[in-house]
Image 1 (cartoon, rainbow, N blue to C red):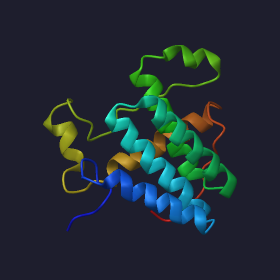
Image 2: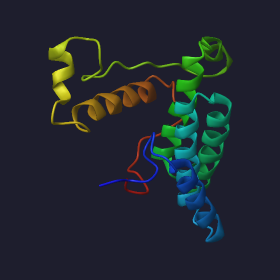
Image 3: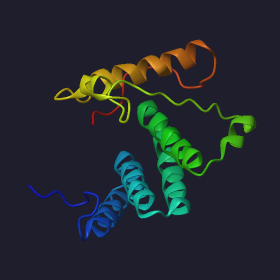
Image 4: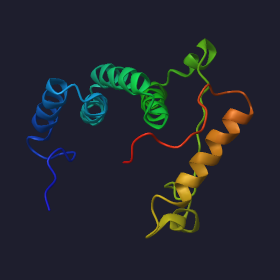
Length: 153
């Protein structure tokens, strides 16, 4: 099965732009924000970090507007990933807490560590990430509070 919009697929960006246009025409706020995020991902992998930051910012605004806290947190993570990739650790002194989690299944830690998610992706590493977020909240380092997602993925 071919999914249009997959990274590297010819025409993927154009399909995402079309989706964004349709969501905007119907004022589907979650679709608009999600499309902006997906276009940000495309830009990130194309190496256009400024465009990725712009798209992630638009997605962030949309997810905040509709109250989707899970996607809001994802956008903050995407933005922080770019700053981290660029070596802008100085942002930590400007109100950002930089938290890097090496959850089970992460690469380059040996087969035993990586094998934790073999044929079980989306479980153990997500639990590790959720535990990391809970720890940040408990330490008072996050303004995000934990709740159920407002929209399934």
